[in-house]
Image (cartoon, rainbow, N blue to C red; front, side, top):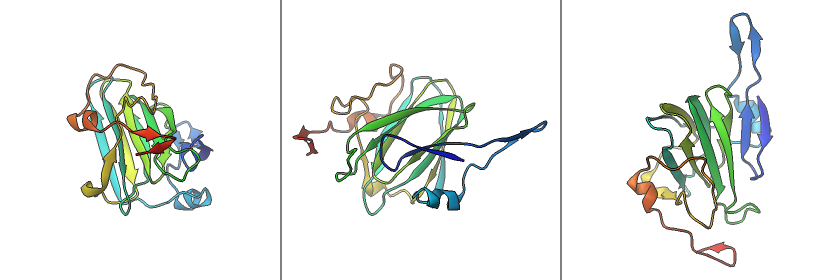
Length: 182
């Protein structure tokens, strides 16, 4: 695996190192030892699958508060998505900054999402499928979210939003004063 750190500290884009022959290819998609060597948490508590009918569907931006913070390893297994993360760690030098990357079934790319990062994505194709390996068991009482269109974040989504849940539209806008989230 090739680990490329994003502009957001502790978040990585991971590309497979394919070993190809006449049959196709083989590649390791997860190795606890390699994750540890890069300072990442190599724990998988749950694996989730999301299927999305329509191009332009937006899911997110979600994160979990302590003690139920979640790391995620996200990969698009069918179609294509634009995946976005936001650093929600108040003491981080990249607090409230975001990063986006295109994940597709064809590029096999993955995104490692650290604890206390909001995560969401928009589908770029119909019938997009996304898998998440999550480092903690889901705890609904600790879930938080950000509005996908919050002007304080300035995220530029590639398409108009065609579908979004009522919950994701209802997250409150950030109230930022002197660089601090209220």
